Image (cartoon, rainbow, N blue to C red; front, side, top):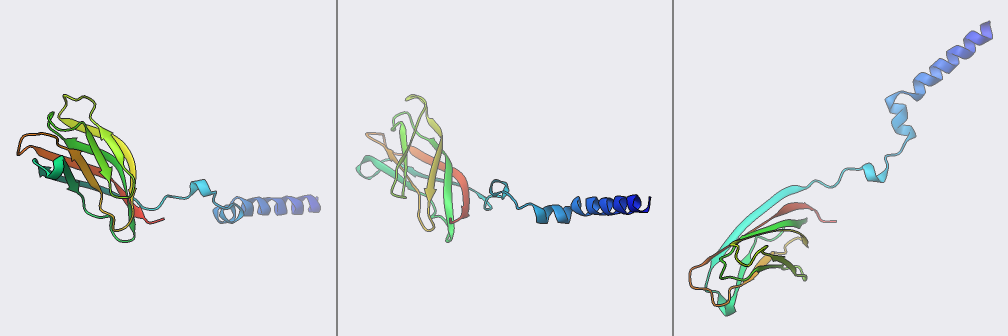
Length: 150
């Protein structure tokens, strides 16, 4: 009887140790997929210009990505007259991303995009204004987030 009691006490003590949160954390390593992503700081900027533009190319320049951070643009919206191009060209990092209006008769453009700009790089939006009359507004907004440079 004494040995059964001793064995039972040892088994209960081992169970208590193995189910404690500290023991569970030491026993299991955190899987890579469970780690949190780098902090993401929301970003939005609206810039504009008026027609006429030099060489029929209206270029809207946004603030550069902060030092040590990468700007990730996930959305482009624009107010464009029906007389202006159906496309906004997002550029500045060596690549171009085209965002198009859903209809040539629309005055607005909304597009989901994915574009990256390194520290110090200023995104630009290029819009072909063609023979648009003077004093038409072109307003472009980019939104996304900044994160630590990988």
